[in-house]
Image 1 (cartoon, rainbow, N blue to C red):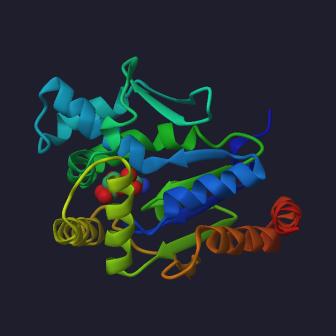
Image 2 (image 1 turned 90 degrees about the horizontal axis):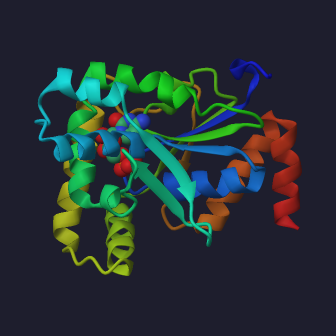
Length: 239
Ligand code: C5P
């Protein structure tokens, strides 16, 4: 079996709405690699706390939930992502704005973050892993082959999120969403534990005004510069 440390990892960190989830999924699919959506784990902790009546300020109880998280990721017949918590499907529930806020509240606690470390590192399996989140490059996979920090202007991030929710039939005001995004950015960047910030060796990528395809190709091109596999896939995709 390949030791985990030899399995290549690409990290994509950035603020809410920067498009990192979409880009990470595309890059992983192009390479045939595994995908870790680390935000989903923080969302699941918040959701499990809500289901069990645990307060979002009770760090110890939340860390207990994180340590014993019974989660499964798979896909339906059409390839759509499905997420299971305690054997119950929560795919739509974890994407709700309220769950996002809850995730950012539980994510401030060091014991919660520590409890999720092994779970996250367990996703590192051959042939490779694309991991997206806030601290993938700074904490969880410090030895990643490539670290990307993806940004976009606050207005564009709010607009994208608004469209995403509208497509799902959820009606929220753009102004309220902008406020939520700014609050979440502030909380994620100012927290003392694993704050949102680029790793020293991260490559910065601003996705404002750029298509998903263009950003995906930039990342695949960068992977090609550091790993043989990325170069092949990046080239094949461009033809
Ligand atoms: O990326 P997503 O919006 O799903 O993340 C939800 C929240 O989980 C973020 O606002 C952040 O507070 C937290 N998070 C984190 N570290 C990660 C991923 C997410 O603190 N690696």
